[in-house]
Image 1 (cartoon, rainbow, N blue to C red):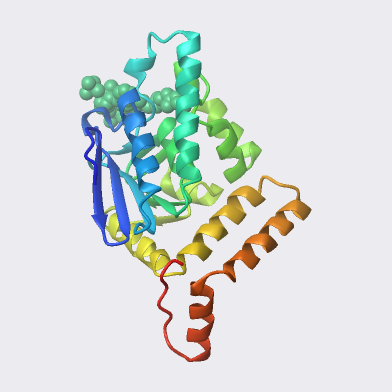
Image 2 (image 1 turned 90 degrees about the vertical axis):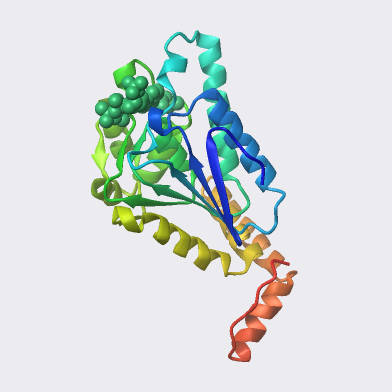
Length: 261
Ligand code: CAA
């Protein structure tokens, strides 16, 4: 697997763990890191052996404490717009990655860090994790699609409350409002993420990918269109060997062995 300066990549069977690795800067996302994340997911898309990805932050303090403020402090408007566009593109690539991506949020997930977590399919948080969109404290708005993903996850009211105040909330509160899906003890976070990833990796891969597509695309459509899209994907599952295997195994009262075809 390719090596990066600001990412640590570990492959364990069908699961890949990618850690943002700038612990001294609380894993703040600078341009180089965003470019590496983009490249990483682009390359991984070609690797059919990967069935789930975990994103976490290196060190015990931060998942990602936001976009790198030292790189933005002297930015001009057009460069800032391009920076936001790059962040949106990279996070959309993660959101649309054809296999599930789990955020294992080990500490601060602020600004661009919260936005990165929201681009993942499932968010597991350590009890120590902290969340927020503190951009208003810096005189800016969220720029990596936080104004769009946050209200879709937690509703407009909670999204505005967090975004207008810049307040930092803890993992339990993030769970209460629907920003995270599960909270675990800090020492259990990575194991819990790997167990979940392993559980998903054992399912029929094409079905999992289609389910992700149906949810991601479907929620942006009118219901009728979304139902039609769901029916198409449901039908497409019946072109796979794994559908035959899954149902035959059920009938034969044995465990299925999925091949991803
Ligand atoms: N960018 C660059 N450097 C950062 C950073 C960031 N987002 N967050 C933390 N750091 C750096 C600090 O400057 C500090 O560096 P030095 O050791 O060289 O001084 C180091 O990381 C450790 O941070 P602190 O000393 O501040 O640690 P703390 O425990 O006292 O505070 C914190 C932790 C509350 C997370 C604080 O660091 C903080 O408020 N960080 C900024 C959070 C933020 O505003 N994020 C949003 C950025 S804007 C954005 O993301 C826009 C967007 O939508 C794309």
